Length: 407
Image (cartoon, rainbow, N blue to C red; front, side, top):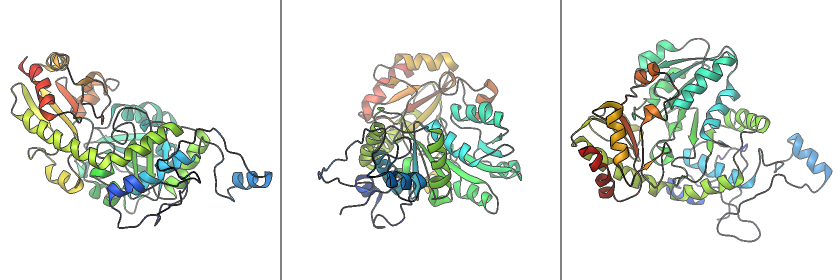
């Protein structure tokens, strides 16, 4: 089947058969062959596009004719990635950005203005908290942080000026689960958008739009790529919020994704389904093993029955519990550093979602720039360690951790 590729501003709608499952969409969606008949999509490495006539150029710039103009906001390779990801998430439109934080910035600046109010989970990624507290606040946009699982707290925090509810589920790094359907219900009858960061799960494990979210954002740098090769982000939603407002922000302000990075992400989506299944299996095994290890005070993983939102996670994440395992060791920062430094195979890096397992101390890295009070409120203790379980043999990962645990 030869498919017509749609641009970022065009709704996906019924472009693909409704019977296509996620794995098929990851391989086939967003594909349009050129006259050369290539089987693997090309990379359109060009800054601009030529027009057949002055009249065509005028029509393109006026929006009277669809087609490419300038790669800051229209490029066939980027459009291919957007089409594929929107199809997998079940959204109408997708806009690609230069990073995951650029995606968060894009949805905020495209939809909020001075005097607006955000209610957000207090367990967000440290840079997201910094964006809300240090930069959006300068524009007169105030944020109230609440516990992710306290629905009454969310309800109490909402005001007439509230225009956005923002969550990560599972959260980083404690894997707290947010009841998306409950928060979506809180937004009904209000002007508030419900935005979900789906970075940890990807559409292979959960699809927030099906639970009432208005917008889904991604750091494509993580699991969507899966090999730690490129930085990028994405915003997925409907034709108005994403296809119109977020796209206009991208076109004007330019936090764009490069065509080469888009090609990397586009090809990586072909294996997303099988990769996430493997991450989930290994993470489950690691989490269950860590529970039994001396020196481990607590394990945070939604696939454990001891997790506070285990049943909710099973309902919202039918594809699996994810590849992130966090655990608290005795001895505080000293104990955590000792374990991390003893590992030989695991990569000490703050990135996640890689084929290679990574290990990090959140309090001194990913969440170091927020205040000690904010870290305490979010449960980011000095003894906390986060592992992104990769695709190595599970026994080898356990063996690498064992030396540090014995210490």
